[in-house]
Length: 378
Image (tube, rainbow, N blue to C red; front, side, top):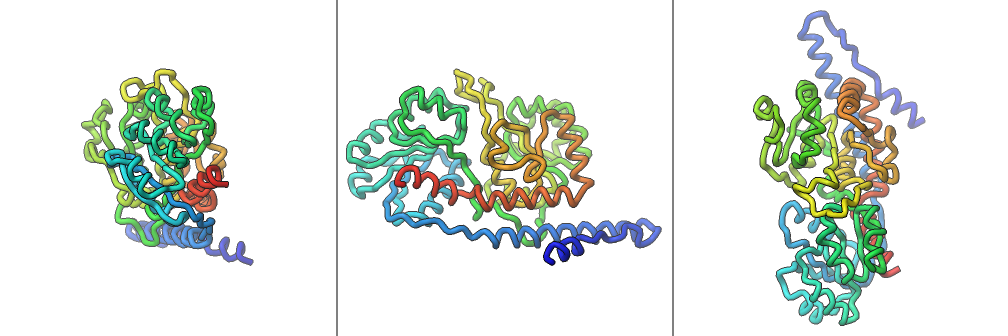
Protein backbone atom coordinates (compact mmCIF):
# COMPACT_ATOMS: atom_id res chain seq x y z
CA UNK A 1 0.00 0.00 0.00
CA UNK A 2 2.82 2.38 0.88
CA UNK A 3 4.60 1.68 -2.39
CA UNK A 4 1.46 2.53 -4.35
CA UNK A 5 1.14 5.85 -2.58
CA UNK A 6 4.80 6.72 -3.20
CA UNK A 7 4.51 5.80 -6.86
CA UNK A 8 1.36 7.86 -7.29
CA UNK A 9 2.98 10.83 -5.56
CA UNK A 10 5.75 10.94 -8.13
CA UNK A 11 3.50 12.09 -10.99
CA UNK A 12 5.02 14.55 -13.44
CA UNK A 13 3.61 18.02 -13.98
CA UNK A 14 2.81 18.54 -17.68
CA UNK A 15 5.43 20.62 -19.47
CA UNK A 16 2.93 22.07 -21.98
CA UNK A 17 0.64 24.12 -19.76
CA UNK A 18 0.65 26.60 -22.60
CA UNK A 19 2.39 27.36 -25.85
CA UNK A 20 4.04 30.60 -24.77
CA UNK A 21 7.46 30.68 -23.04
CA UNK A 22 5.97 32.13 -19.84
CA UNK A 23 3.66 29.13 -19.40
CA UNK A 24 6.45 26.68 -20.16
CA UNK A 25 8.68 28.45 -17.64
CA UNK A 26 5.93 28.29 -15.04
CA UNK A 27 5.52 24.56 -15.66
CA UNK A 28 9.25 24.00 -15.31
CA UNK A 29 9.32 25.98 -12.08
CA UNK A 30 6.41 24.01 -10.64
CA UNK A 31 8.09 20.75 -11.56
CA UNK A 32 11.39 21.83 -10.03
CA UNK A 33 9.66 22.86 -6.81
CA UNK A 34 7.70 19.62 -6.69
CA UNK A 35 10.84 17.51 -7.24
CA UNK A 36 12.72 19.42 -4.56
CA UNK A 37 9.90 19.05 -2.06
CA UNK A 38 9.51 15.36 -2.78
CA UNK A 39 13.24 14.77 -2.26
CA UNK A 40 13.29 16.75 1.01
CA UNK A 41 10.23 14.95 2.34
CA UNK A 42 11.63 11.49 1.59
CA UNK A 43 15.00 12.45 3.09
CA UNK A 44 13.32 13.67 6.27
CA UNK A 45 11.60 10.30 6.69
CA UNK A 46 14.92 8.48 6.35
CA UNK A 47 16.72 10.72 8.85
CA UNK A 48 13.98 10.26 11.45
CA UNK A 49 13.92 6.50 10.91
CA UNK A 50 17.53 6.05 12.04
CA UNK A 51 17.78 7.08 15.68
CA UNK A 52 20.49 4.55 16.48
CA UNK A 53 21.15 3.60 20.07
CA UNK A 54 24.65 2.62 21.16
CA UNK A 55 25.88 1.36 24.53
CA UNK A 56 27.10 3.85 27.10
CA UNK A 57 30.45 2.74 28.53
CA UNK A 58 31.49 3.64 32.05
CA UNK A 59 34.96 4.78 31.02
CA UNK A 60 36.95 7.99 31.16
CA UNK A 61 38.68 9.15 27.96
CA UNK A 62 41.54 11.63 27.71
CA UNK A 63 41.14 13.02 24.21
CA UNK A 64 44.09 14.79 22.59
CA UNK A 65 42.86 16.96 19.72
CA UNK A 66 44.88 17.27 16.53
CA UNK A 67 46.22 20.69 17.55
CA UNK A 68 46.19 21.79 13.90
CA UNK A 69 43.10 23.95 13.86
CA UNK A 70 40.99 24.17 10.72
CA UNK A 71 40.23 21.97 8.74
CA UNK A 72 40.92 19.38 11.46
CA UNK A 73 38.87 21.15 14.13
CA UNK A 74 35.48 19.96 12.73
CA UNK A 75 36.76 16.37 13.04
CA UNK A 76 37.77 17.08 16.62
CA UNK A 77 34.29 18.45 17.28
CA UNK A 78 32.69 15.34 15.78
CA UNK A 79 34.84 12.97 17.84
CA UNK A 80 34.46 14.90 21.11
CA UNK A 81 30.67 15.23 20.79
CA UNK A 82 30.28 11.56 19.91
CA UNK A 83 32.59 10.38 22.68
CA UNK A 84 30.57 12.36 25.21
CA UNK A 85 27.43 10.55 24.08
CA UNK A 86 29.06 7.12 24.43
CA UNK A 87 31.29 7.37 27.53
CA UNK A 88 31.02 8.53 31.13
CA UNK A 89 33.60 11.33 30.89
CA UNK A 90 35.80 13.00 28.27
CA UNK A 91 38.76 15.21 29.21
CA UNK A 92 39.82 17.31 26.21
CA UNK A 93 43.34 18.61 25.67
CA UNK A 94 45.80 19.24 22.85
CA UNK A 95 49.48 18.47 22.13
CA UNK A 96 50.65 21.83 23.52
CA UNK A 97 49.61 20.82 27.05
CA UNK A 98 51.32 18.55 29.58
CA UNK A 99 49.30 15.52 28.50
CA UNK A 100 51.03 12.96 30.73
CA UNK A 101 50.46 15.21 33.74
CA UNK A 102 46.75 15.38 32.88
CA UNK A 103 46.64 11.60 32.61
CA UNK A 104 48.24 11.28 36.03
CA UNK A 105 45.68 13.71 37.43
CA UNK A 106 42.53 12.22 35.88
CA UNK A 107 43.45 8.50 35.65
CA UNK A 108 41.68 7.87 32.32
CA UNK A 109 40.90 4.44 30.95
CA UNK A 110 41.97 5.52 27.46
CA UNK A 111 44.17 8.11 25.79
CA UNK A 112 42.83 8.80 22.30
CA UNK A 113 44.87 11.03 20.00
CA UNK A 114 43.50 12.35 16.73
CA UNK A 115 46.18 12.55 14.03
CA UNK A 116 48.96 12.27 16.62
CA UNK A 117 51.62 14.09 14.60
CA UNK A 118 52.10 16.89 17.14
CA UNK A 119 51.88 14.77 20.30
CA UNK A 120 55.33 13.82 21.60
CA UNK A 121 55.83 10.05 21.73
CA UNK A 122 57.54 10.50 25.11
CA UNK A 123 54.19 11.65 26.48
CA UNK A 124 52.48 8.59 25.00
CA UNK A 125 55.06 6.25 26.55
CA UNK A 126 54.72 7.94 29.93
CA UNK A 127 50.95 7.46 29.83
CA UNK A 128 51.30 3.81 28.83
CA UNK A 129 53.59 3.33 31.83
CA UNK A 130 50.64 4.40 34.03
CA UNK A 131 48.65 1.42 32.73
CA UNK A 132 46.42 3.56 30.50
CA UNK A 133 45.40 2.18 27.12
CA UNK A 134 46.57 4.39 24.22
CA UNK A 135 45.11 4.77 20.74
CA UNK A 136 45.65 7.01 17.73
CA UNK A 137 43.16 7.67 14.94
CA UNK A 138 45.12 8.76 11.87
CA UNK A 139 43.52 11.40 9.67
CA UNK A 140 45.51 11.49 6.43
CA UNK A 141 46.66 7.99 5.51
CA UNK A 142 48.45 7.13 3.31
CA UNK A 143 49.66 10.60 2.39
CA UNK A 144 51.97 11.19 5.39
CA UNK A 145 53.34 7.72 6.12
CA UNK A 146 56.90 9.12 6.28
CA UNK A 147 55.79 10.77 9.52
CA UNK A 148 53.25 8.31 10.92
CA UNK A 149 55.69 5.41 10.61
CA UNK A 150 57.62 6.90 13.54
CA UNK A 151 54.71 7.54 15.90
CA UNK A 152 52.37 4.54 15.45
CA UNK A 153 54.61 1.91 17.17
CA UNK A 154 54.24 3.85 20.44
CA UNK A 155 50.48 3.23 20.68
CA UNK A 156 48.59 0.16 21.88
CA UNK A 157 45.96 0.62 19.15
CA UNK A 158 46.26 2.21 15.72
CA UNK A 159 43.14 3.13 13.74
CA UNK A 160 43.61 4.11 10.10
CA UNK A 161 41.17 5.28 7.46
CA UNK A 162 43.19 3.61 4.68
CA UNK A 163 42.91 -0.15 4.17
CA UNK A 164 46.40 -0.44 2.67
CA UNK A 165 47.93 1.03 5.81
CA UNK A 166 46.82 -1.87 8.01
CA UNK A 167 49.50 -4.27 6.75
CA UNK A 168 52.01 -1.41 6.51
CA UNK A 169 51.75 -0.62 10.24
CA UNK A 170 51.64 -4.28 11.19
CA UNK A 171 54.91 -4.85 9.34
CA UNK A 172 56.69 -2.18 11.42
CA UNK A 173 55.61 -3.83 14.66
CA UNK A 174 52.28 -2.26 15.63
CA UNK A 175 50.39 -5.01 17.51
CA UNK A 176 46.78 -3.82 17.05
CA UNK A 177 45.99 -2.08 13.76
CA UNK A 178 42.39 -1.60 12.65
CA UNK A 179 40.74 -0.17 9.55
CA UNK A 180 38.35 2.58 10.67
CA UNK A 181 37.41 5.29 8.16
CA UNK A 182 35.75 8.47 9.33
CA UNK A 183 32.01 8.81 8.82
CA UNK A 184 29.37 11.51 8.69
CA UNK A 185 28.83 13.76 11.69
CA UNK A 186 25.11 14.22 11.29
CA UNK A 187 24.99 17.41 13.35
CA UNK A 188 26.97 18.95 10.48
CA UNK A 189 25.91 16.92 7.44
CA UNK A 190 22.24 16.15 6.98
CA UNK A 191 19.53 16.99 4.44
CA UNK A 192 17.95 20.39 4.85
CA UNK A 193 14.18 20.53 5.19
CA UNK A 194 13.81 23.75 3.23
CA UNK A 195 15.28 24.80 -0.08
CA UNK A 196 18.90 25.91 0.26
CA UNK A 197 19.71 29.52 -0.51
CA UNK A 198 22.50 28.16 -2.72
CA UNK A 199 21.23 26.70 -5.99
CA UNK A 200 23.70 24.83 -8.20
CA UNK A 201 23.57 22.16 -10.84
CA UNK A 202 27.05 20.78 -9.99
CA UNK A 203 29.51 21.45 -7.17
CA UNK A 204 33.08 20.57 -6.32
CA UNK A 205 34.55 21.47 -2.94
CA UNK A 206 38.19 20.77 -2.19
CA UNK A 207 41.76 21.73 -2.98
CA UNK A 208 43.15 22.00 -6.49
CA UNK A 209 45.69 19.19 -6.25
CA UNK A 210 47.56 18.60 -9.48
CA UNK A 211 45.79 15.31 -10.24
CA UNK A 212 42.45 17.11 -9.98
CA UNK A 213 43.66 19.94 -12.20
CA UNK A 214 44.88 17.49 -14.84
CA UNK A 215 41.71 15.39 -14.67
CA UNK A 216 39.23 18.25 -14.93
CA UNK A 217 41.04 20.48 -17.43
CA UNK A 218 39.88 18.59 -20.60
CA UNK A 219 36.20 18.81 -19.58
CA UNK A 220 36.21 22.04 -17.57
CA UNK A 221 34.42 24.03 -20.25
CA UNK A 222 31.71 21.38 -20.56
CA UNK A 223 31.20 21.21 -16.81
CA UNK A 224 31.02 24.99 -16.55
CA UNK A 225 28.39 25.08 -19.32
CA UNK A 226 26.37 22.62 -17.26
CA UNK A 227 26.56 24.77 -14.13
CA UNK A 228 29.68 23.78 -12.17
CA UNK A 229 30.72 25.82 -9.14
CA UNK A 230 34.06 25.24 -7.35
CA UNK A 231 35.21 26.20 -3.86
CA UNK A 232 38.74 25.71 -2.55
CA UNK A 233 42.40 26.63 -2.74
CA UNK A 234 44.85 26.38 -5.67
CA UNK A 235 42.25 26.39 -8.44
CA UNK A 236 44.09 29.25 -10.13
CA UNK A 237 46.34 26.43 -11.39
CA UNK A 238 43.66 25.68 -13.98
CA UNK A 239 44.81 26.89 -17.43
CA UNK A 240 41.32 28.35 -18.04
CA UNK A 241 40.91 29.82 -14.56
CA UNK A 242 40.64 33.46 -15.80
CA UNK A 243 37.65 32.49 -17.97
CA UNK A 244 35.74 31.05 -15.01
CA UNK A 245 37.01 33.08 -12.07
CA UNK A 246 33.45 34.17 -11.27
CA UNK A 247 32.45 30.50 -10.83
CA UNK A 248 35.39 29.57 -8.59
CA UNK A 249 35.55 30.78 -4.99
CA UNK A 250 39.30 30.74 -4.56
CA UNK A 251 41.49 30.52 -1.48
CA UNK A 252 38.84 29.67 1.09
CA UNK A 253 38.55 26.80 3.56
CA UNK A 254 34.83 26.23 3.99
CA UNK A 255 33.45 25.20 7.37
CA UNK A 256 31.13 22.20 7.68
CA UNK A 257 27.91 24.21 7.90
CA UNK A 258 28.72 26.19 4.76
CA UNK A 259 29.90 23.05 2.98
CA UNK A 260 26.72 21.19 3.93
CA UNK A 261 24.62 24.06 2.58
CA UNK A 262 26.38 23.84 -0.79
CA UNK A 263 25.90 20.06 -0.87
CA UNK A 264 22.21 20.41 -0.11
CA UNK A 265 21.79 23.11 -2.75
CA UNK A 266 23.48 21.10 -5.52
CA UNK A 267 21.91 18.51 -7.78
CA UNK A 268 25.24 16.73 -8.28
CA UNK A 269 28.40 16.86 -6.18
CA UNK A 270 31.69 15.64 -7.68
CA UNK A 271 34.18 13.84 -5.46
CA UNK A 272 37.68 13.30 -6.87
CA UNK A 273 40.33 11.84 -4.57
CA UNK A 274 43.82 13.26 -4.26
CA UNK A 275 46.77 11.28 -5.65
CA UNK A 276 48.91 9.09 -3.38
CA UNK A 277 52.08 9.77 -5.39
CA UNK A 278 52.06 13.59 -5.59
CA UNK A 279 55.43 14.51 -4.07
CA UNK A 280 54.61 18.23 -4.16
CA UNK A 281 52.20 17.81 -1.23
CA UNK A 282 52.59 14.28 0.20
CA UNK A 283 55.11 12.64 2.52
CA UNK A 284 54.64 9.11 1.21
CA UNK A 285 58.07 8.01 -0.02
CA UNK A 286 57.06 4.34 -0.23
CA UNK A 287 54.18 5.38 -2.55
CA UNK A 288 51.66 3.37 -0.58
CA UNK A 289 48.51 3.40 -2.76
CA UNK A 290 45.11 4.58 -1.58
CA UNK A 291 42.11 2.26 -2.05
CA UNK A 292 39.70 3.63 0.57
CA UNK A 293 37.11 6.39 0.14
CA UNK A 294 37.83 9.80 1.63
CA UNK A 295 35.79 11.32 4.50
CA UNK A 296 33.95 13.56 2.02
CA UNK A 297 32.32 10.43 0.59
CA UNK A 298 30.22 9.97 3.72
CA UNK A 299 29.54 13.68 4.22
CA UNK A 300 28.13 14.18 0.72
CA UNK A 301 25.92 11.12 0.98
CA UNK A 302 24.68 12.24 4.42
CA UNK A 303 23.44 15.46 2.80
CA UNK A 304 20.98 13.62 0.56
CA UNK A 305 22.69 14.67 -2.66
CA UNK A 306 23.81 12.58 -5.62
CA UNK A 307 27.55 11.97 -5.51
CA UNK A 308 29.73 11.22 -8.54
CA UNK A 309 32.97 9.73 -7.21
CA UNK A 310 36.07 8.36 -8.89
CA UNK A 311 36.23 4.62 -8.42
CA UNK A 312 38.32 3.27 -5.56
CA UNK A 313 38.90 -0.41 -4.90
CA UNK A 314 37.29 -0.47 -1.45
CA UNK A 315 34.35 1.83 -2.18
CA UNK A 316 31.84 -1.02 -2.62
CA UNK A 317 32.33 -2.04 1.02
CA UNK A 318 30.46 1.14 1.96
CA UNK A 319 28.11 1.96 -0.95
CA UNK A 320 26.82 -0.02 -3.92
CA UNK A 321 27.95 1.74 -7.12
CA UNK A 322 25.04 2.55 -9.38
CA UNK A 323 22.59 1.98 -6.51
CA UNK A 324 23.70 4.13 -3.54
CA UNK A 325 26.45 6.15 -5.22
CA UNK A 326 27.64 6.72 -8.78
CA UNK A 327 31.20 6.32 -10.04
CA UNK A 328 33.34 7.35 -12.99
CA UNK A 329 36.75 6.32 -14.30
CA UNK A 330 37.57 8.99 -16.89
CA UNK A 331 36.84 12.65 -17.60
CA UNK A 332 34.52 11.72 -20.46
CA UNK A 333 32.56 9.27 -18.31
CA UNK A 334 32.17 11.94 -15.64
CA UNK A 335 30.77 14.40 -18.18
CA UNK A 336 28.39 11.78 -19.59
CA UNK A 337 27.06 10.89 -16.15
CA UNK A 338 26.62 14.54 -15.25
CA UNK A 339 24.50 14.92 -18.40
CA UNK A 340 22.45 11.84 -17.57
CA UNK A 341 21.65 12.70 -13.97
CA UNK A 342 20.88 16.35 -14.66
CA UNK A 343 18.18 15.17 -17.07
CA UNK A 344 16.89 12.12 -15.15
CA UNK A 345 15.45 13.44 -11.92
CA UNK A 346 14.02 10.17 -10.59
CA UNK A 347 17.26 8.25 -11.09
CA UNK A 348 19.26 11.05 -9.47
CA UNK A 349 16.89 11.30 -6.54
CA UNK A 350 16.66 7.54 -5.91
CA UNK A 351 20.43 7.05 -5.73
CA UNK A 352 20.81 10.08 -3.45
CA UNK A 353 18.15 8.75 -1.08
CA UNK A 354 19.57 5.25 -1.00
CA UNK A 355 23.01 6.70 -0.27
CA UNK A 356 21.52 8.80 2.52
CA UNK A 357 19.84 5.77 4.06
CA UNK A 358 23.02 3.66 3.94
CA UNK A 359 24.95 6.49 5.60
CA UNK A 360 22.55 6.93 8.48
CA UNK A 361 22.26 3.17 8.93
CA UNK A 362 26.00 2.37 8.95
CA UNK A 363 28.37 5.29 8.46
CA UNK A 364 27.99 7.91 11.19
CA UNK A 365 30.61 8.87 13.78
CA UNK A 366 28.54 7.04 16.38
CA UNK A 367 28.95 3.82 14.40
CA UNK A 368 32.70 4.37 14.04
CA UNK A 369 33.49 5.31 17.63
CA UNK A 370 31.29 2.54 19.00
CA UNK A 371 33.30 0.16 16.84
CA UNK A 372 36.57 1.63 18.13
CA UNK A 373 35.52 1.28 21.76
CA UNK A 374 34.36 -2.27 21.12
CA UNK A 375 37.80 -3.14 19.76
CA UNK A 376 39.56 -1.66 22.76
CA UNK A 377 37.20 -2.61 25.60
CA UNK A 378 35.12 -5.44 24.19
